[in-house]
Structure formats: structure tokens, C-alpha cells
Length: 293
Length: 206
Image (cartoon, helix red, strand yellow):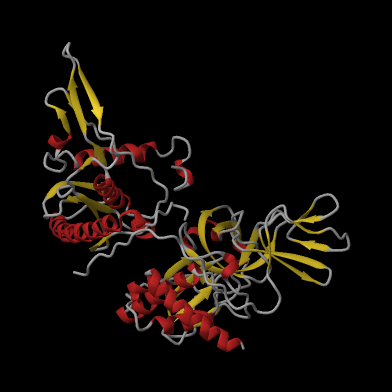
């Protein structure tokens, strides 16, 4: 019977500053004046009076004449082409409502969904009635953003075989600003699990499927029991991601892999302890800096 | 408080509050948990009344365990000033607090029980469930254990059912976990006591 550890509350140590990568970080808060020059364009801020003031809290960047504010902790703002992982909240007439950690629920139209039996089939009334057979409330899906409505709601599509309903795995919810934008968000890690880094901050870890080609385009969920070794790998990955998020490191396949390798000497449950977390993150940060420079 | 989740805004948390109050009432209903005789000032006339207020600042799962640990720690820290009763000529009694702020009596918390929550997930049970684990469990058993391993009360929560054999198993686990919980808590309380005035006081947002 392992002993229970308790500790007295101590003041939180400020996260050690990472080495500045050229150019100082200009942090702004809502209401701060960025510039009083009228020649600048703005993105992510509101103009009040003569000067440019920011409505967001985050890093301010300047690219020629465009001032950009990247928010540190925010709800997901959809952009066309992003990969998202979402949960079905409602089944409506010809669409599903998907929760993606954004201000408004995202929409998955029936016509944007891959139906078994071919792509070019017209969606009939029977398809509408059978919607619940494909996706129910509470299911997790991976999809791509097709378009963004004027009010900010996002329209999704699963028109490729790699998107669709997700089977067994673990979901980790993080802030969307911590997921690095990359060419591909579906990664097969060499440690034995696969991970989908949704741009909306939902990270899905699942056991690597044995056969690469699937017949139904992601509708049949594999409910076979997952072997213990795979489960341990997935738990360790989940704890590593939680550690990375606590220390505000960007999430991408290399950082997750380095963190996983750094955590191997410790037990899976020890990774969540503050001291062990710090040690692992320090090592990961060091390896990432070596990779860059 | 509303700091924990937005659902507790206004009167939203009242139901949870009454549930916590009634559970704690049951847990402490055992006579030997708190030595009430030490709270007496004048037999049959005056005694100290202890009020325990619990304010939830953050919801992270495993609510009752955390509350019972906090209550035990708070009772351990309580310092009740020593009083003297003076008799007047007419017979009316006056109560006088001693002037020395360090002259006080402490409570004996050896028999104060701690609650251990065992949540049933699938066919096994889990201790100290997080919010996500609690969302997966259908039924859980709240067991209050003293430091010697004696059970003072038991309560089942949740809409699922529990097999009688698994209840027995959960009780045994609860007793084991409860004993080690008490040992760890006592150790940390003694450690904090030994720090004395050099103890770093940290607020919730610190």
C-alpha cells in the first residue's frame, strides 16, 4: 500500500523564463494603447478614438504595418483548414451541433459528412432519419473546418477518410493557444500511440490502429479491449501533455515525444507531482533549445 | 462559493451545501469523535460551542475527502482561550478571558474521522477520483474512518447499484486508505506545528 503524500501549501514558483528568442515580447492587456499612429492596420483589436487600443490580452506583434495581438488564453477562433476534435452535443434536422471550445457551437452539416456507400450519393430523407445511427450525442469526432460564418460559428466537414468518429482513447483539453500550427496534426508517435492535436485545444490520444486502411471511413468504432502496454503508453502521454500545459510549453509532436522520453525513468503517476514535473520539463526545454540552435 | 464553478452563483450551491452539512453531521454523530467534555466551562451552565464553516474555493473532484481533511486540520489548529469564572456577591457569574493570547487549550483530534470516497468504475473502485473520473462512475461509497481504523458512518451516493460483496471490499479498502491518510495528515500537521512562527502563510491565490 503506497503511502499517501501530503504537503503544506507553498507560494507558487513563477515559471522560469525561457531563453528569449530574438526580439522582446510585448505583452498587452485589454485597454492598452498599442500605437497612436494612424497608419497601422489592426488584427484582433478594436480602434477607439485616434489611437489603436487592444481588446485582447496577449502578445502584440508588429509586421510592417500590421499589428497583431495573439491571445494567451482564449476560446477557439476557427480558421479555414484547421483540424478540430469535437463532441456532438445535439442532433438537429440536417446537421449536428459540435462542441469545440469556441464561443458558438460548431456545425457539421449532413451534406459535409462521409456516408458509407460512396461519396456522391444525394442525401435523402432516409439519411436524415438515420442521422442518429451515425453520430449520437456524446460522440467524439475529428473534422476539418470548411468555412466560418459571419457570426464566428464554424462549419465542419469530414470529407476525407482520415476524419470521422473517434474510437477508444483519451481526451485532454488544453488552451487553443498552446497548440502549434503545423503541416499535419495527425501524428503516429514511435512510442506506440497516435495523437491528434486539434487546433481547438482538444488533444486525442489513441492506440495506433493495426491496419492502415479502413473500409467505412471512420464510422465503425473498434471496441476490442486495448492491451495493458498500450494503455500505459497512453496514460504516460496524457500525463506528459498535462505537464507541458502546466508549464505553458507549445504542444507539437517533437515536444510531446521529448517529454515522454524524459519521463520514462519515473513512474506514470509520479509525473503529476510538481517536483518531478519540473525536472521533466527542464530536460524537455533543454532538448528543444538544442534542436533549435 | 461561486469561485468554484459558475453553477454555485447565487443560491445554486445550496443543495450541495445541505448535503455536505448533513454528511458531516452523520460523520460526527459518533460520541467519541470529538471530546465534548473538554469544552465545558461550568458543568450544566456554560460550555463552548464549536461552529465549523466550510467555503469551497475550487472544485476538483473528491469533495468530501478534502472537506473532512480540512475540518480535522482546522480542529487541530483551534486554540480556545482559557476562561475563569468569577462569582459575584449576588451569585451572578462573570466569565473572564485570560489576557495571555498563548494561554489556551487545544482539542484532541485523535479520534476525529476522515471521509474516504470510493467510486465504482466498471468492476473496480477508485479512491480520490478527479472530476473526470467522477463523471464516469455510477455509484460511490463514502466511508468515514478514524485513525485506528474504526468506521463511524457509511453512505452510498449515486444512481447506480453496488454489489454487496463489492461493498465489503470497498469498506476494507476504505479502512486501509483511511489509516494511511490519518498517518500522513498527522505527520504534516506536526511538521507545521514545529515550524511555529516561521511558517510561510500562503493564501488561496498565491
